[in-house]
Image 1 (cartoon, rainbow, N blue to C red):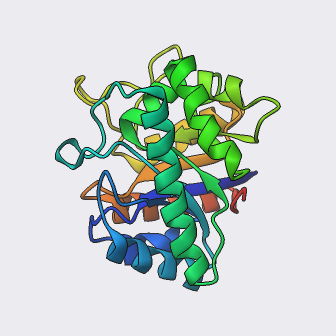
Image 2: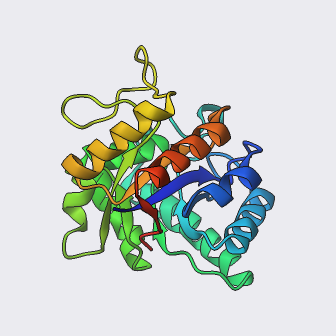
Length: 231
């Protein structure tokens, strides 16, 4: 009955101070798809204050589309993009006496790495250099390339709908989001029982993220779950 509750933070959405106390892991934006040094520093400080685990959340340098547009980068370019972002977060965390415990790709990079073996392999080159556990969809290409290279942590989403094959409903499809906390908790229970997830995500850029996360957290605790970071 242990589960980690994570959120994508440091993206300048304005609700980090309220969200951090509700979660157990913070996926901290590395400053390219959104946010910046000031947001990163604030979020790291909040995570430290509330005893929340810190993860790196690198994405494409595409602020116009919030890192949610798939890009086709060369091999060296993609590895360098990821290493650069991980290094930046590592340095900022170290300056505050903190530790980065895992990495989770953001947006389009996440979905490409979960679907495309080649992108997954390039991403793992960066993650494995720093010996970071990797968060991603269970049964994905990202999980497959982690074997014998680094630890993989299966993740589910409380606020996104799923297709029958276990992939997420695209954001531009009709009704891609779960907004009812009761429905979200039922989905979390399914994800744990049938998909083996160890961490569940809520998106920090959702306008109703604070109320939704609080309701999901309270419902999970009421059902006997213990919220604890996997890291």
